[in-house]
Length: 329
Image 1 (tube, rainbow, N blue to C red):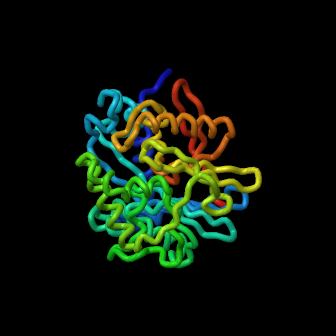
Image 2 (image 1 turned 120 degrees about the horizontal axis):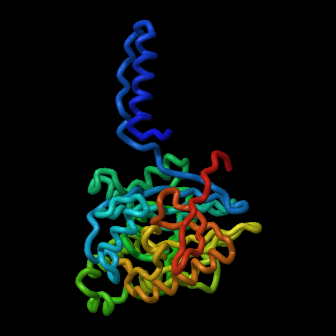
Image 3 (image 1 turned 180 degrees about the vertical axis):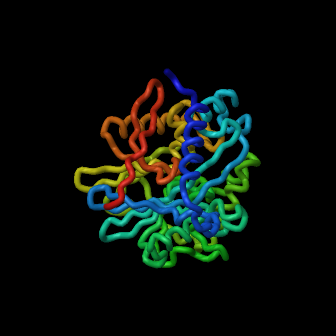
């Protein structure tokens, strides 16, 4: 004998009514108002002896456009979203900078949209600074801020809401190739119209810092134990990182992919944000093949929070298995 979902629900309701009828009148319970807000967004885990704190900057949602993925039909993108149990007509992008405590250095990798975005988005994004405080991390204690590339969701958090340096005691480390491109007046004058605001924002942020930055390339660790990997394509100087301690390793992908349900599963799909999509695809495949071969933990800036997991090969693409949540370190 089989039961439908309706049969089960009706039976359960009948049992509840029967049970309630046999009870004496109970005192009325006080109304509990809904909280209406989330708990602070941070999560910690270890990579060898290194402590990683994933700290959310929030998220933004917008309607799926025809060219969010530039080289496949919108219908295919909607289908992929639906298969991942996401709204087929909407994109939600999550932002997750991390803090790396090596034991001797406290390092922030990327900074989110910054607190200036809190009011603009009604609190949806720009949460990083507040969540740092909730995690017990003092911005004044940060030794270094490492920037992967110069899109606004990675650099705007270098400033406070009133445009002052947010990490007053930290060395700001930026990719040399990225700096050369975005600070080139000729590149700015030649840029397509949709990129001009990006050039203006880069100059706004770094001018507020007096352009006091240290440029790095792939020749040495940015901080002992944190090694840059050139993954150009998303931007001309885009960088990812490996963090190694003892026999453990983490691949910090930065923006190698946007939503993993789309661009990890389909590494040949081109996101509208990728400035050189073919180069970005090549960087994706090379980096994730390495992560698969070496069974590395992966931290993705745009993955569902807390944005850590393992990548496995699947067909022509990859799939993400979230790392299990741990209640202790």
